[in-house]
Image 1 (cartoon, rainbow, N blue to C red):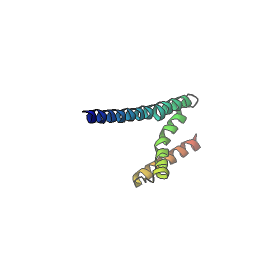
Image 2: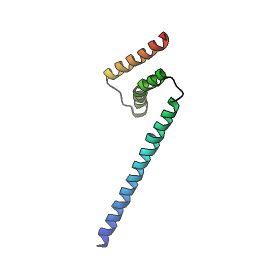
Image 3: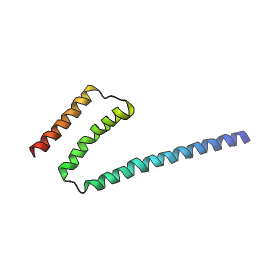
Image 4: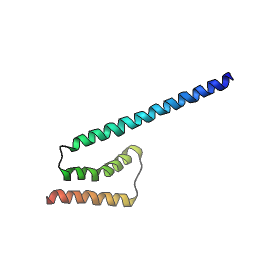
Length: 94
């Protein structure tokens, strides 16, 4: 009986530890990150905020290449290049 009680306590401690990590994951990158992102948008013009939204997946892909050595398929590279060219064209035109 004592062995079963110890085993359940260990499982409980493991579950609490996992819950703490889950809460930290929800608070730090998600809540704080989006709060800072949204606060920075109030000083930008509407078209600048849209450009930032378009660049977000491209920057995430580039970070994935350098940090995790994960290479995107060629279709993603082409579409990312088209988005970048469109942004450059828009900035040069207006």
